[in-house]
Image 1 (cartoon, rainbow, N blue to C red):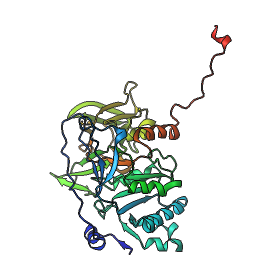
Image 2 (cartoon, rainbow, N blue to C red):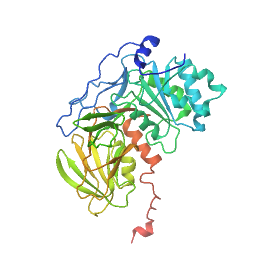
Image 3 (cartoon, one colour):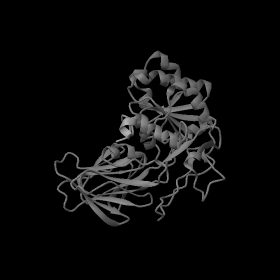
Image 4 (cartoon, rainbow, N blue to C red):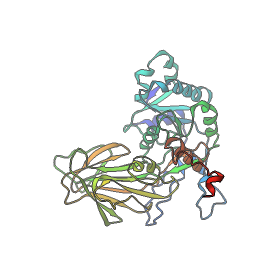
Length: 402
């Protein structure tokens, strides 16, 4: 029956659906000093994990051999749908009917999706009865969702990532948006594709995330925001970021002026419109528009890209995934800075505040259409038209003589 998830959601799920405890506990990974970054967890949500390859050398698997497997058959799925998009109504309805009636899955979705006026008609009444809803920032669904299906563009995958601050269930993204660089699946054959995922027959790519801590210095007129911890008078907010952290000058007409530290050492002062710190996944987003190179998601790295720097020699750089970056407002700054995380949670950074960025232990396991390598190059060609040009004509026999 339809119900709304409240703060006691997990207990309610246990009693209603008689769920069993996951076969493992989440383990927080302590950051090591290795330049290769922390080893990502290989358990995703309550039941999914990565299939171990006995032929792996030094426990490092070939990206093309990363496969999804289930400890137990999946029983629940979270659907992320773009809000107020009428073109998604029919695919959304077909997917819900398929999952609930043919696969007997428990379907979760955000309350604002089911309350969308676009689906408040009689044809969706029967579907709503089999849907469990939750509210972002209020209800914890981390132990209740076995895998995720996204309907829309790349933004739906970013939003799915933001809902899980630790282990993320496997994500299957259907291309129903505008660009679709991160959404490799077409909806035409969704039934067979979803069935393969449920059966554990799928390749995955682990998209690294950034663990970001925003520390606000205590101010008398400051307010304690959500997701914050107050220590020694300072307020710390922690986030998991899939694409990028952007620090910019905000509404000010002055140049942004921020100091950039790497493992505690000042490496440079960024003067310009701002700076982008991105994951390999984010290298094909805002960073590439700012002149950065494109990095395959399997490469363990962090990219630092200036935005319109006031220096011709300031080029984008790539640093090892294991370093710790810190960004602070410079003493010579004429104005404050602003930070946004995957385009959300935008907030002002004043003098004394800091942004600490490291590679997270909790990647996003993205389900591949074919495999991590082919999917990436296919996206480069289809979405960004990488290296598309008119072909050069061959030389005729007469021209070759000259």
